Image 1 (cartoon, rainbow over the protein chains, first blue to last red):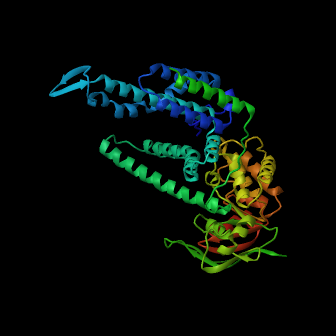
Image 2 (image 1 turned 120 degrees about the vertical axis):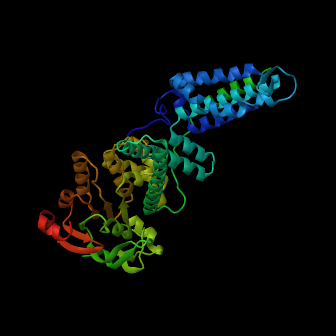
Image 3 (image 1 turned 180 degrees about the vertical axis):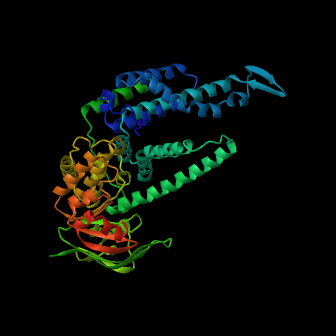
Length: 255
Length: 233
């Protein structure tokens, strides 16, 4: 079975795709720092960041809908955490509701913080989505490695990327095997089966890990994985980073 | 002739108590191509794991190129006797084909330029040039098997240890692998159920059953069904 849902559009050949992965990582990291540090009341600036991201997105020729759908993935989690903030922030009251015995009040300050969290998290995820859809996962890992991210984290991510597809395949196989023999619709019984499936998956994964380790040892692995670096900074990369950073700080510092 | 592999009275029991090998003795000459066949659970793959020191037994002795398989020699032995696992998903664990093929070379301490050159050459040999930056899960099963072979051939081993090199392949892919292996002039130990491939690639056949070598001799036995049956196959 084939899957390509992690870095589906990373094989395109746009200007953005061709930028050195290290440059992209640095730029998007700075971008997120700037977004997060912007004061919440300056809404125009957020619009500015959004326009900047939109331009990058259009240049990269990735389908807009795909990226926006992707970027919304974290919103439910953010909502879950942030939804109560408007009710708990003291100060001026913007509105109050009586709900059963509860008297809920909403403050403008609370709403501002709520909107701030929502905007910043969405813009940050949007940036990361653009980064991961314009960079191959393997190049991204290599870039992070060169930028001195701890090797263990990189290795975990690299094995994750290599084997997530296999794991999904295995789940599908087990599921098919269950569905082709499962007749009872009793939910309690189904739960029991799901428990067995998880256990089975765990054992299979564990055994695979052991075999992979043997394969690594057989080729001289002794505790550290080394890879070759093959990036070259071109003048275009310098221009890319320079001009975008100027625009970025202009938006951030403009009054 | 030089004995390239010497196995003397090798006995191995898995940590959980399952007996796997029971007094195996086997000599392999340089340039030999040996097919090891036998029913499932006979200990064929376990034997292979002993030949590059992944498993080590206290009972019996294994010598590769005259070196006993002990921790002190492992680095040398693993660069000379290379094992290809049955499942390419286990063999290929790096993010890209290039990284996978380069993995062993880098561990052997080759210089970056030499690594790039050798990886390029070997991928050309297996007809997979241009796939360097692919991820293994974007390859077909046959291609994965070829890359698995490339990951060890690039280390220029003297002995190739192959566990089921043709399992799950369609006829065309299988032919590709067999023709490729025929061209490789190294000592080969092939564990397989694929008698057709064994006949094409090996001169000598070893039959294992229940952890023992029950037959060792000419490859003609693979065509003699009643004899195979008498050895538990």
